[in-house]
Image (cartoon, rainbow over all chains, first blue to last red; front, side, top):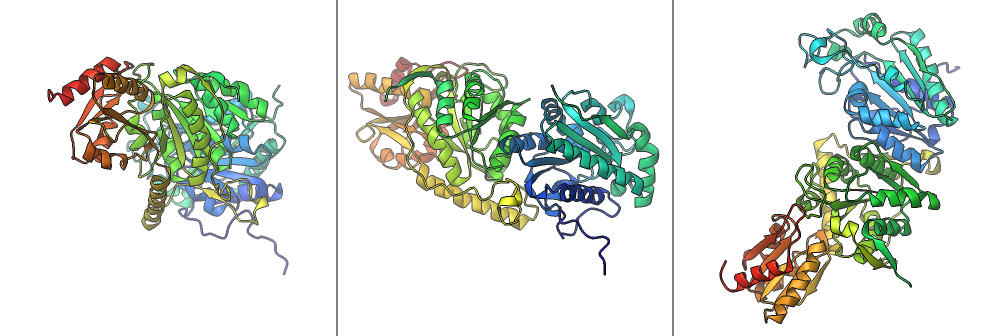
Length: 248
Length: 354
């Protein structure tokens, strides 16, 4: 019988620990497929964050370093400067990248580190139990914002992609979503471009993936996908924000 | 071999490059900035990489990444900056990564001052970061010894897969002395078969650098393994210098810059007929407790002199173990202990005045 669908060799057979309906599994698979298709799995080192996706190193079949909360871009910088011909990527959530790790991500982007960042934005802290993140939408409830995020108290959520795209050496920045199959295909295409950008040595690249957290959003998986489409995309518009450009 | 006249901070850089260090990640802070400046100038000449990070936090995490990737790598800072590095140092110790960290100590707490101090002893030897871990802490008292310890320090780090700290102070960083670069004693260094270099070259088995052990029994076992390593380090690497201790009525203890002042004080004491000796710890961790066993039987009293208000003195008390009184004299905030003040203190102790 002809095999029409199989696990990419970039993923290990380990059973993932993610909650039902969580989109991390989809994003892991997209990253894995891209590593296999670009034939870079055997020269890749991944930097795992602190958060729900800490255990990504159990699921993706390449070398890995586990970083302190928010410090993945600095750790990735150290690896890439030692092995400039290898492929180095970080996988970070919004608490990790957009809150505690803002300095590290901004300066890695400013330096044009030849790394790829997969930024999974689900507008909440997952691992610690649904606390408010800098990306939590105005009015969105969280365990530390029980009445919803008050924009007068906390301001409006941070748009990391737009902020980083102001940096000349951040050469590829795109925001995608994984709430339906069509958008999943677009997400994969962006992730592929981000890694190609690293292979050609152009500069820093990041893909922000809008994702769901049904458990902490207190929704069913289907409701969560709908909520993402109706609430997150209007505030976090999809598309390419910084195009590949040669750094002078 | 002809000696070079070098400033302490620059000599550290020269010794590191001679020892094969090719990566430096740091952030400017007084009084150690000559070291990153030297590395930014010299590392590219030997194919190395100097990178000025956005913060000490980022710098130590770059060291984590580079060391995990198999490189011989270092960072340097001074007291407030070392406080910022403590998160990363705990991770480096937990993930068992070798690297060299230089602390050119200045006065604290807080922003403190920019003059020499020894008030980071607790931070260096008793933790600083979270968890049950140990730094190997080397305390030179001359630019020459600083070069020797930097060169050996990289090997010690590699041998035990453990971070090594050079604990200097503003005086050692800023002063100039003649130095030569000597090969350290040869050590058997294990291959870095754990480094993340990409899986192509190692039979398809992926490698992981991590300090995370989510199962409590795994974390306990990891800690027990670390403790066994620390016991091995205590056994093999404890280092101190002993000066006229055997027939001394009073044994002084001092490290680094302070030990030079104390050795002058001992000469002055001898001239007035007082038999004084000195134990100078060269490794602050592991601390040379054993050096005090015999001395605690023969000497009448002990005096610890520090550029702090009493930190190492606690280890001296552990070494002396209640057998004899242990006194303390210290200056802090960038003030140096004075030779005559030390002599006066000794006279009072032996005269039964305190």
